Length: 267
Image 1 (cartoon, rainbow, N blue to C red):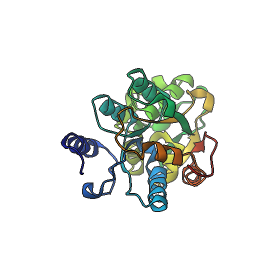
Image 2 (image 1 turned 60 degrees about the vertical axis):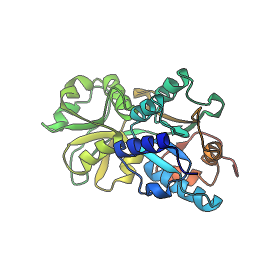
Image 3 (image 1 turned 135 degrees about the vertical axis):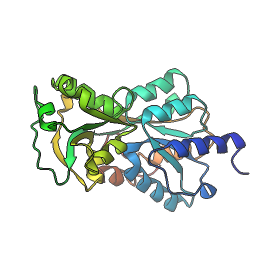
């Protein structure tokens, strides 16, 4: 049978609000529904395509957006099967509300945050304690994901605070709904600099990396994944297991992620 009315209604809401929509038509949607951090799009699309080809099953339906927005939709009852967050906080948020299957939770990936500029920019910035990013902006904007809710924004703010640069730039920040939206602002030349994940910078040819933030300037960047407690798809756990296989690993590493789990030969 097809998706229930409630499930269809939530699909319409979730995919209409996702900033990076999937291209799979709703009529062809798989039973497996995944909410994933926007920064995962390139890698996870590749992994999902490979999984579908290997198993003969339909492509998973994946909604990409800020982890905060996705977690709140799950809290509100979105009938999702699997969630991959860009930080531990939003997975912890769902865990405290007993909305995930705790025994499936795994810290899947790691990442770095970087300072980027438009590709044709000649700007140089040495990221270090006390660096004057406000002067480098020269009246321009600093693109960041929402600094209070979205993981990339939170990591970026934490790093700038630790390095003593936040005070000088906080009024010059152009906040976006998620990290890919912040990336786009820089790619279009609408912001002089941006703070995004290294994986995002690698995926966008119209930006260049100016510098990498020290790992000790912010909390560790960890992407946890877990099956949702009320998951309806029998493929949720098998797909999560597939994310840990040798088959999936190259797609993540090619985009610049660090795979935190020991890869297995097969799921």
